[in-house]
Image (cartoon, rainbow, N blue to C red; front, top):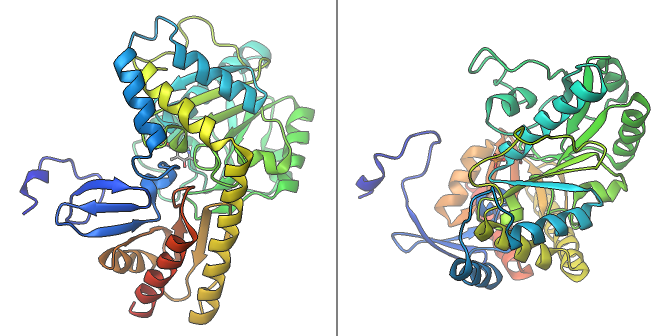
Length: 388
Ligand SMILES: *Cc1c(COP(=O)(O)O)cnc(C)c1O
């Protein structure tokens, strides 16, 4: 029945269905089965499936200019760079196509900065269990268990410390260090937050030691936690911020944003065929303009509280564990239960949830999800957990 998919390279164990249509929080497969989507392309479709603002931006821009080569400025590129600089308080924006590419750019920028300002230093202190992407350098920067020996030889220069351990960072920073790089909430690790206090301490420490602070907001940025960027909860100013996922609301666009003091690329150091194409940048503008509205962000925070409360009640009822997260990036810890199996059972019942760890479920609905959809999700999840 799904014979047409056999030429698709098997890089992930996909269920035997083919998705054909999406609207808001709902997705349909080719057989007409409907799914309530609490994965949303891994926290990508922040306005849900096929929202009007994205359709309008795509159509208007496609009629005007789709691509003109990164050798020239274009209007949406300029507009999105200005929006991101204004909303971060940082100075320069490089637009690219994926989170890994944004982080790869951040690593290159930090190494360039080290070559210029720190005597050729190039090491970047990174976090155990962190996730920064799947290129060779971003895999080396990640602390994902099992990745240590993949695709040898590894890109060198990424010593690891535990998230939240300031003493370990102090010890790891040497004259060879240029930066500390981290996610404010480790998403792939199972929604593990760095505390606001620790982020402030780390900001102070990196300033004292004269190294850069790189914050990977690819999963947590663009409203996911109820603020436009998760680092805002801690009130810190990073030197470099990377964005992806939600920035395009479903289309591939990502960004590397740097403070003036860190922004040291020279002509020829960085680039890419598709960087800042008008079509994708126009969508990025529409998404950021929608999400940065304080009323929109307040609703994300309120619905996040509602989701967490509903999950806590369910967890108590069924004897499961902790519910944690911020805004609409939420995890539920399961008790003596295989999360991947639960996610498969939920799939069969028409609910998409993700299992980032063996006993952890993760919820990343559209930022526009309704209370009614949250209630429906909890009912489907209850049934899936009871029968697992
Ligand atoms: C998804 C993710 C990335 C990688 O983004 P891609 O677009 O898949 O390359 C990097 N960092 C974090 C925190 C992510 O969640």
